[in-house]
Amino acid sequence: MSSILTNNSAMVALQTLKSVNSNLAKTQDMVSTGKKISSAKDNSAIWAISKVMESDVNGFKAVSDSLAVGESTVAVASAGAEQIVDILGEMRELAAAGTSETADFGKIEADMTEKANQITAITGAAQFNGVNLLATDVDGNGGTQLTVLSSLDRSGANDDSNSNPPTISTIDVAGVDFEANLDMTSRTSIASAADAQTALDEIEGFLQIAVQGAADLGASAKRVSDQNDFVGKLTDAMKSGIGALVDADMEETSARLQALQVQQQLATQSLSIANQAPQAILSLFRG
Image (cartoon, rainbow, N blue to C red; front, side, top):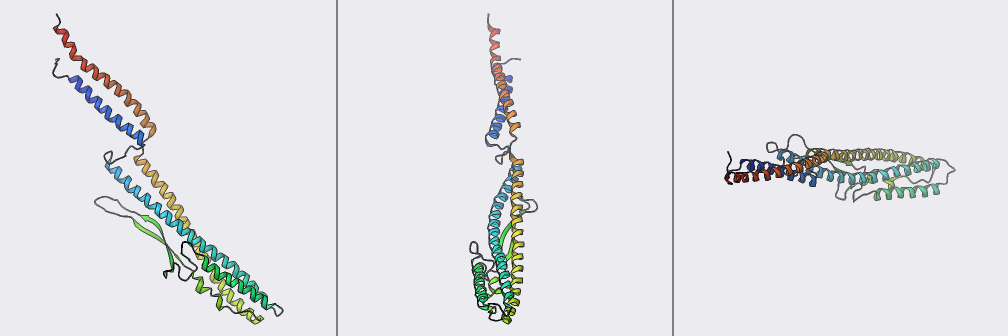
C-alpha cells in the first residue's frame, strides 16, 4: 500500500543515514585524536583504567627525578671516598718510608700534612644539593642518611569497592661519616722512625675505614642506578599498555573511514530515492 502521509522507505533510509553519520563522526574523531577511547562515554571501564595508569606514569616521572638526584648525590660522595682511599694509600707509603732511620722526617711530615688537609677538604666538598654523605651531619639538619623515593607500588584493583592508593617505597643510603672516622688531627706526627711506625698503623686503620665506606657507597650507587633504569623501563611498559587500551589502530580506522564515506553516499542516495517514491502516486491521477 502506498501512502502520501507515511513514507516507510524514507524513514528506514533516514535511520540508516543517521547511523552511518554517527559512525562516521566517531571514526573521524578517532582519526583526529588518534584514540579509540578519548572520553568516558566511549568505554567507561577502559577509560577509568587508563586514567589510573596515566596517573601512575606521572608519579613515576617524579620517582625518576628523585632517583636521578639521589644517584648524583651518591656518585659525588663515592667519587670523594675513592679519592680519599687513593690519598690514604699514598700516606701509607710515606709512613712506610719513614720507618727507615735515614728518612727525611721533615719532608715526610710536610707531605703527610698536605695530604691530610686534602682529605679534610674532599670530605667537606663532597656534597650535592646540600647533602654530603661523607659528613657527620649529612643534610645540615642532623641527618645520618639520604632517603631516595624509589617506587610507587600498587596491588589489587582500584575501584569503588577497593580503594587502593599506591604505596611509596624508598631507598635509604647511610652516610659513612668520614669527618669523625677519619680524623686527620688525631694522627701521629712523624719525627722519628718510631713515630712513622705508629703513624703507619693509624693510617692502615684509616684506610680500612675508607675502603669500607667507599665500597658501601658504591653498592648504594649501583642500587639507585639500577632502580632508575627499572623505573624507566616500567614507565615505558605502562605507556605501551595505555596505548594498547585507548589508541586507535590507524590502518583499520583509515579503511573504516573510507567504507563509511561510501556508505554515507549510498544512504543519501537511498533517502533521495525513497523521498521521490510518493511522487509516483501522481501518475494515478493523470487523465
